Image 1 (cartoon, rainbow, N blue to C red):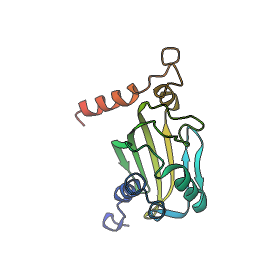
Image 2: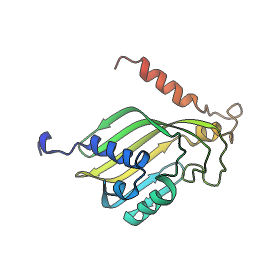
Image 3: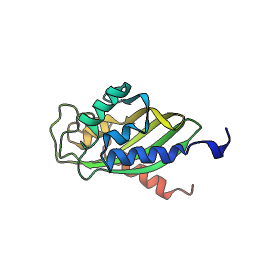
Image 4: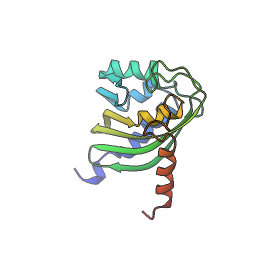
Length: 171
């Protein structure tokens, strides 16, 4: 297949993220996915399998369930023939429960800056699965549940140092 006939996977994934975080539209988000996708949040094992499982996860635990000040800051993107890999920082104030990231933890009111890596696999022009990674120790330190002075975790500095390095690089 020539490049002219290939779908723009980056643009499709951008739409997917917009539908999740800005439009907060579960039905439209699901239209960017295959008939049997899965979403796997690696640190907590939350997500969904199959259309109904992903729909349930999005509707009840993710889409429209993030704090109002949530921002997604892209650091880098790699696109291949069948994948988009985004390195990003998710920023938010933990002022509502976020079950998929902090199950059973009441809002702490703390501000969080958390690097993520999202690997989205495509089948044609639809997302077949997402693997989402973040450092749970740094998240727990930022919301006050781990003491970074007593454990080898650094909290928000993971995000800040990453942005400092990227913004200071020549690439």
